[in-house]
Image 1: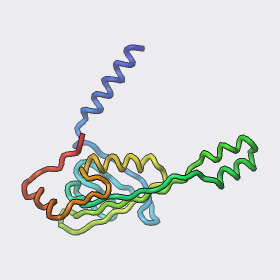
Image 2: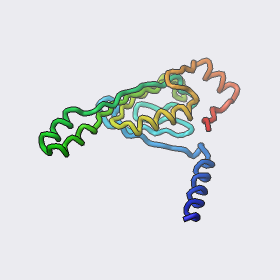
Image 3: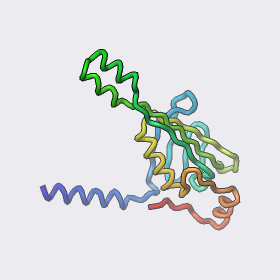
Image 4: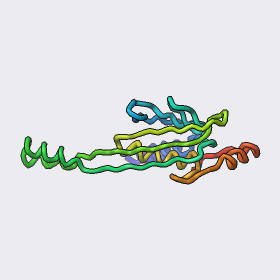
Length: 159
């Protein structure tokens, strides 16, 4: 049993030491009414609506709600009796996010994505803060972006 704990500790340390440059994640959601995939890595954010280099993200934000599905609870209680009360634990999630920035050519790009599950929404928030070094709703002007690029200052993800 001790060996298993040591192995888990070693794996955890390796995971933490993994360079963020190789970091990459995909989010499946809705862009408007269509299904879409948003790819985020240490260099850029990609979607069918455009690509934004991480250092050129000017603003991102959003939010949403999770609420109990009363209709599901009532329906399952009617159908299954007291066991159906578990239906009141069902939740409806609705999270909407946007990312604004500039592509490599300097054109404005706006990406929107909607999640119907709170797990990717929470992960998305954490990764956006980590990679862009901007809090939700915090802005970076085009002048600040150009100054960073002029000074060849790379935007390193937060650890």
